[in-house]
Length: 346
Length: 238
Figure 1 (cartoon, rainbow over the protein chains, first blue to last red):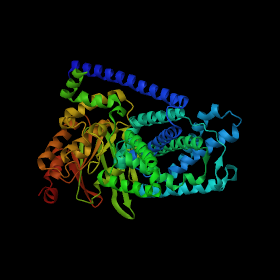
Figure 2: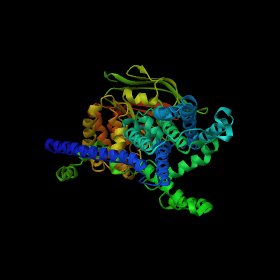
Figure 3: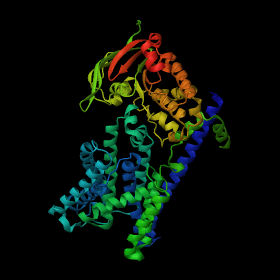
Figure 4: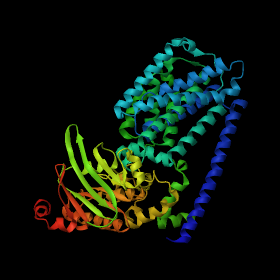
């Protein structure tokens, strides 16, 4: 191969990576700054701020479910169960264990603990569940969701069916921004790693994946655990935003809502997850004046979506910025003419 | 037959699916550097044999690779040991690009830095894949998909390739092209175990072959011997 050309491509690849890093850092810094400034100077009214936080939480949830349903091609129907685990565990920590105002300090720890508790539960569910596939996995996870809800309803220490309250409003705009950005970053890196390629192979053809050397059993369990972790984090954030949780708010309806966001935005796409979560949350608020008619219009839109875009808005496609530079540079390297053109343009 | 090292040894392999014996105690050898073919009609047990070697079908008997018994080795680790299969029907990851297809099979590899060199080797063998590098595997033609399946197996750095009917669904001309590539792959040092229905093509390139019928080996010999065998002529070559 032409050494000079490869040199040029490597240089241009470094160039793009640098440019991207600077812009990404800029976006992150601006976002973080805004998330502090908005509540501090009341740039937006309380309601809009609340909606923004809902969006952040929903992005985390959608990404979490997209990992299992979109990228891995399995079907989980019980993610609200993991969400409730995160919500209850973190709330117990902030209310019962570290009360007396220490909540603010240990809040990140409480959220992470909620995630870890959900991840552990995910591990317990995943090991037996992944002996089954497709429809069966959906049924197992659905059953799990129902079990978690019933168990919570019968534990008096967390209020039983009455619900649990007493949390301070610890979920703020900066924290929501932080956890959302962190989730996007972590899941994006996971997907574009070698491990992530294995996840995709399970969706495409599990047997072929195994024949290509992918430890499919291990990948499935790990992905489920990671996904549960993020669902737990989202649950913890939600609990400390609305300051009241009860088992009913984590039932099958909540799981369905997550599915809707995933399939609306697009399976197997980070950009899709974000678009799905944003669109759904916005629509839900915009259509609020329609009251009960909302429940007619939303499903109707879904039906239309499934007819015209069965894979969702971004199904299996990705926004350029989420694709690692090396992934498209390596293809350029092997495509002579185009690579030269790109190298010259930059 | 020859003094080459034995790479793969199959001893008394028996596979049953719910009480029906698909493979009934077959034994054969694959020497390093050879092309060995398993011939037979539909249902003779060829694919089942390959699946047993790859570890995705439970079996009785023993399969030894470089002297190591593969019984307790999970399928994905078998790939790591150096056995890759090009599955029947190719098993392309349809929604993933050619590049992604090729990189997935490097999952077991520890020598990450050599992957680029191997990519160049694959693209050198199949320039067509290079042109289609960004295209989803599912949009390739049958012949291109077969090339992709071969390239993907090569990317796992296999020493032994198990090929399940590479000529299936391809025109005679394309099949010939694929088989030319198989000779090239073999001369670069990769051992091939080739399952085929197209006995004519397979015996042209094979050092030795075994004929399976309803789960048993009924004939074996060198490629030339089998081609000259009247039984084979009648049953497969026409």
